[in-house]
Amino acid sequence: MKVLLFGIAKDIVGSSQLQFSEVVPKTVLELKQLISKTYPKFGELSSLAVAVNSEYAKDDVPLNRNDEIAIIPPVSGG
Image 1: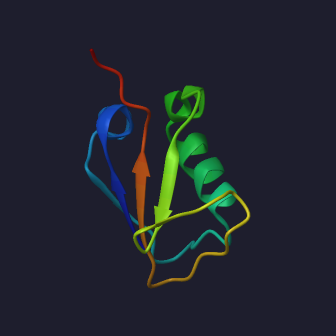
Image 2: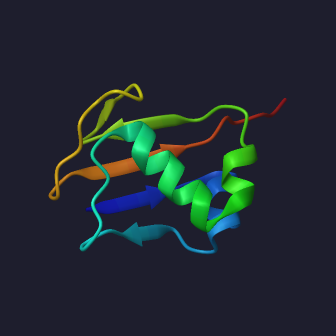
């Protein structure tokens, strides 16, 4: 499972990608919890969008080993 990270999420993790091959989270919520456990500052993000295979997904969406996930934090600007 490939997870693409953007914005502040990328800065927190220190990479634009994470790869899950052995431990594959079962849902979007489990994925966020797993990332937060490894990178505690990730859990401090107030809101973020998650896309699974190019479609926005809620926390209860199931994940599969071959999914491509994008984590998109809120964007601010003027």
